Amino acid sequence: MITKTAILILFLFAALVSSIPHPNLQKREKLGFVATVLFNENDIRGVATFTQFSSKVCRATVQFNTGFTSSNDDIYTFKAGNHDITPNNFIVKPPGIAAFRKDFTNFNCKSLVGKKFTVKRGNKVIGEEEIKEA
Image (tube, rainbow, N blue to C red):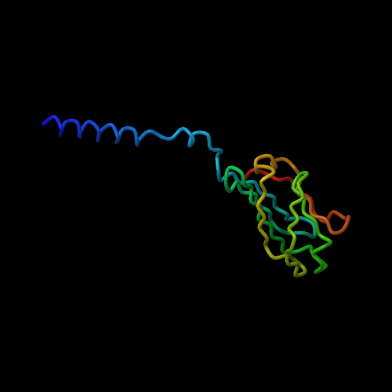
């Protein structure tokens, strides 16, 4: 009888301990934060989305449908605030570009809100809009 009682007490203790949340879960950053910028004016049209993919990774997804007149990808640059997010290789098919995705670990997505997203062809700004929280 004492053995059954001891086993029952140990079982209840294990069940209670396993139901308590781990303290590291409380320290995680809020994931899934999204910031967007929409280019819907002038000659350039497209969208850029910044998603907090993990506690250390901000993922940028960028696509433009108009405004790109040259198929040379070396002349275009993309900046979010002070961060150059231009990918090493991307496909330009005038008048737009194929969507590209790039991960960043040197900033979080929330820090971009209120800053400018700038698209340049050479030294000429062809589009600039404010990054907003989605």
